[in-house]
Image (tube, rainbow, N blue to C red; front, side, top):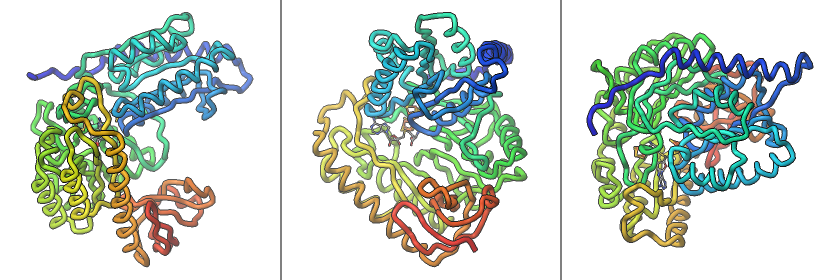
Length: 475
Ligand code: SAH
Ligand code: SF4
Ligand code: F3S
């Protein structure tokens, strides 16, 4: 693969975008004058936290350009689809939505439709949009979404679809701000891209090679967030454990979390995702020693069968994974694990699947994201023989989910009568009169309380545990 130089987006490039922000703002202000009305945007995000965070950054630029957020697709003046390519389902949904937008654009020709994100990094998707979705105004990718202001500006004077997708990687965009969903917690990118090439996965092709942000850039961003009232940060990377490998200095992920632990105002540190093959002892000790680092680890296993794991190119066996979990539990007894599991990988037998269920029973995850294997063109697994029948895949998924949920419910039941520490995030999703927050183990807790508690750490006694959440009373 060779060494690649890490390039940062130049200051001039961002200044150019500032210019477009002002120009678009002028156009929008002229249109509405001082009526007090604003143009509206709707950003629809699919996929993982990387995409969510990229959308937060685009939303900040949109607000600077004078757009107010809306959740009504018919009312929005600009609709942005930030897409995910990880499974076929996610892709199909986007094509469905684009079809729907065609009828909206017929009634409202001025609406701007933009599509970006991981799907756009694949040539066949760009071709499909050019062929069947000509009503789209701009198509851009994961490496150049900072150019959104320029695309909007250009789209005002043109009927053509703007296509600008960069295939080069190595860029690190610094200096983009974001609009957060919650006041109390924030995502912070630490690495971009992925070098692992798990044989089923499209991400290395859509996000490019792995590169790390400089520690001082990460730390100053978190210091700013802390000043802004953020209490919890989630450090993001496809594999945070390999953070630092592309830096010129010697600096590891463990060192980074020790340094973030020193930042005043931050009360909780989370991170995702950890690849089991790169989880060092140094990192286990850092999680154990740093008081702000939550005792929670998302540790995707993908499969419990060593044979399947080898075909997936995961670089660990079932036994090595279980030993790793045991070692972590020995150092940090109250740690909670969650995981990702794929069923129906090519060639997966009933015996392989039983190995996966066995790992679940041994590790006892607090929860698990379970997926049916989806063939991604361009990845090695798509070409493997013995693709599994859809019926078998679904049947395995059901058995898997039923065990995952049983274990989650059993673990949650052990919380009955216990007191947990909750960082209050805001109103509960299901009942707006109640509050919700999370424990260090990332358990969702619902309870009654006044709004002043938002952003605070409170103790809650659990009196009604459910499978996916805990209900309790503030003490
Ligand atoms: N970098 C992270 C997340 C990658 S994508 C990691 O390594 O864990 C999130 C999850 O999607 C993966 O963990 C995997 O379980 C699932 N996934 C990826 N490609 C898939 C595919 N082709 N079919 C089904 N699930 C897939
Ligand atoms: Fe995909 Fe594997 Fe990279 Fe995760 S580590 S993004 S699953 S290739
Ligand atoms: Fe994330 Fe989907 Fe891209 S999982 S990295 S948004 S392919």
